Amino acid sequence: MPKLQGFEFWSHTLRGARHVVAPMVDQSELAWRLLSRRHGAQLCYTPMLHAQVFVRDANYRKENLYCEVCPEDRPLIVQFCANDPEVFVQAALLAQDYCDAIDLNLGCPQMIAKRGHYGAFLQDEWDLLQRMILLAHEKLSVPVTCKIRVFPEIDKTVRYAQMLEKAGCQLLTVHGRTKEQKGPLSGAASWEHIKAVRKAVAIPVFANGNIQSLQDVERCIQDTGVQGVMSAEGNLHNPALFEGRSPAVWELAEEYLDIVREHPCPLSYVRAHLFKLWHHTLQVHQQLREELAKVKTLEGIAAVSQELKMRCQEEISRQEGAKPTGNLPFHWICQPYVRPGPRERSKEKAGARSKRALEEEEECGTEVLSKNKQKKQLRNPHKTFDPSLKPKYAKCDQCGNPKGNRCVFSLCRGCCKRRASKETADCPGHGLLFKTKLEKSLIWKGTQPELQEPQTATPGTPGGFSEVMSSALA
Image 1 (tube, rainbow, N blue to C red):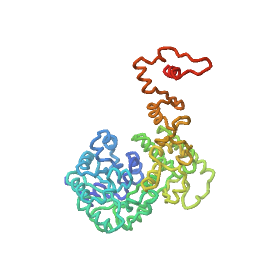
Image 2 (image 1 turned 30 degrees about the vertical axis):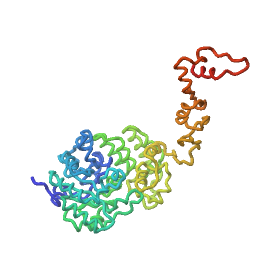
Image 3 (image 1 turned 180 degrees about the vertical axis):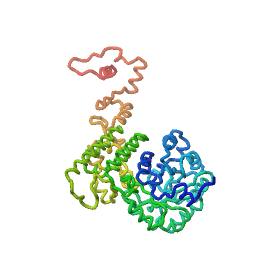
Image 4 (image 1 turned 120 degrees about the horizontal axis):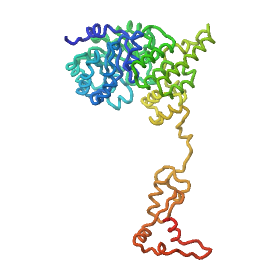
């Protein structure tokens, strides 16, 4: 059977999917995809997989795709990041029997993508992208698709999309933000860019960006003319988004945990999902937020979720008949998360920031902590690394490390050791007692009289140098 292309591929293989769950690293795993499909998602992507690792590591293939085969989990698109045509095709050949299409990630704006030279940081290398898509289109038995970010200029974005279509891309997902729009600088996605791309290409287009409710999905399709809409963050905070519902958080949390028991995944994935689902409630119950961060088992996570449910239900019983304040519903209802802007974010307490928030600030050029310090701060939100609050130490004259308080040379232990071994003086402050070269040579030759005969000292006077040396050698 010939490979379906373009609109035939979308209408038959993908069953005309309009509601799409985005590829999300460590977040769009099988359990979450199944939950999303139960609540209106018609197409899902795997998390982004690294093509080179997928080719090289059989365990990586097993853990991320081969062991996750599930009849309910179709249609499914596997996404890879890659920067080499041969490697990309090798990985795709190993994955094509387990999915309905292979997607090339050209949209990731994170710092790790910049370091690895993939994602949105390939969008200026059109010759390379043409070779990658063309080779995959020729070699694979399933269609190849792309997920991109836009350029600031609409006309350049359109030419970019047309280039990918000409190379063999059969479906294009357009995230309406540039690669610089991320973290606190995200801003609104440009549907104008997406609309222009849709008009300029003859393949199906999915839109991504600004989707927080079913009304947004319908409005986006109407305004841009796309075939489907992809949701990432909106889906994480409300997996029932495509149903047009905002259920109580514990309903979806309990359903997700049941699926995880049937289709296990790393505990870090589960914890991250619960943090997203309970995000607004955890702002109220900070103590349970810390417990959720520390718990080490799936049942422990379920217990924290159950405690959150009980507290919310107690609050409901106290507020029966009350109306929510402001524009948002009660905190125990699945609802969008509005990302704070740069000014609002700067007001947040450093200890309350998540690892992802710290990484986003790093990508935006803000001076932040090292990754090790970020981990320490996650374990202890009140820990601070402000240099102005650290104890002041006298510095070593040579290397700048803290010097010993009683070092006779005003050096640190390392520098003191190197110096004391070359000079005649010892450093009692560091407990270093060294023999001079002369003393070593006399001991070696056995001609040092003080070591062969006991030293007699005049009563009332301190012992001589040999007595001190004898005691040191002892």
